[in-house]
Length: 471
Image 1 (cartoon, one colour):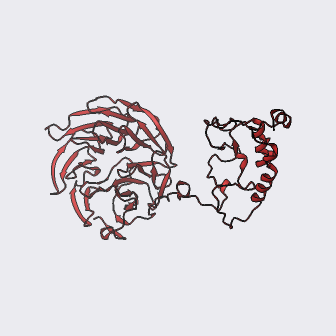
Image 2 (cartoon, rainbow, N blue to C red):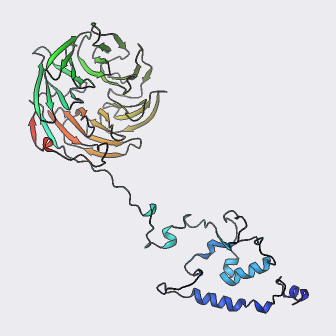
Image 3 (tube, helix red, strand yellow):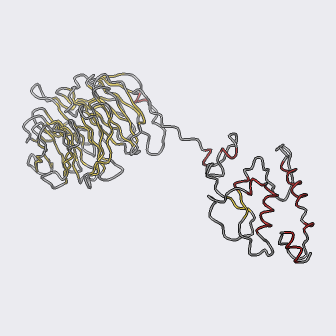
């Protein structure tokens, strides 16, 4: 065919090719015959893949608009005709708008383009069908939530355990000994043997208001109703020292590595150093009402104090005035906990009129989050094994709640106490907590996983079910 004939036919064909040699009708008929095969069970051996039009969503594929530079003699008319014959006239009218950005010239004939009406992933179930299972991330089942036992695995009777929000009468040492203030006495319960030892009796004129072990777990400090702070050797059950300075009851104590801080109803915080002969080395005055919450940060750099004046104050090692005054709480602040996972992250809880757990960045004083728990917040403790914390509550639910941080999703809600859960301490391995209430019971709960295994701790012989007496 000469050049004049090629122009009349409307096709720009390569030299030596005639119109009759294309046989497009025959190819189209053969393609449609193949596409009408509907039975997927018949295996077809072939060296190429020919898609089925009825099930392959071919409109999401398009021919490369620009002819490949390695091919010569092609034209738009030829490309259009080939599209129409292969994919039908409907495909040829599809608007190119919304296509993926043009690819670089290549020998590939087809390219994938985004279909905005379908999910972007080519592995979407809507493309492959609902019965198809995709291996990998899409088929991985969601991790089931960690199960926390809903009942305590041990209960101790604690007669004369006071129902007083401002006292702190329970602490668990790093040597696995639980100290409990009951009336005028302090009792020690050794967790490994369940042995109960009477540490001291303050006599008829005084009573126990707070107990706190040193971090090493050898010595214990006791705050009394008369305002004294006594230091006892927990192993020999021998009093080492008595320090004065407060005018009235000492309801909260907190140890750093070397300093013992005591908070009192007289609104003052005293700093005691056992290495010097004086009763205290400094006095911190900032609260306008009784000091009921007190915690040193894990690096000993900051001391957080909470009071019945609804204030949360933060002090540094050498300050005589608070470096931060946080006044967002609308009730007494007894519950205080420092995160062991992030420096400068402090959690605090408010009383009945507040009910909120608030999180603070003590570097700049910003409030990071606030969660209304629905009940008076009595205590907070942060897990050292996982980034979770536990709170105990009073009016009106008397519950124990485990939270994930920072999402503050509830891991568990535990009930069992009939009165306010005023006291909280954690075992040295970080897996078990003990709670105390005005119902005169101590209850032991497995709430946190171990450091190595995510599964909850299993009960052992020393954690046998049943109720015993602590004295």
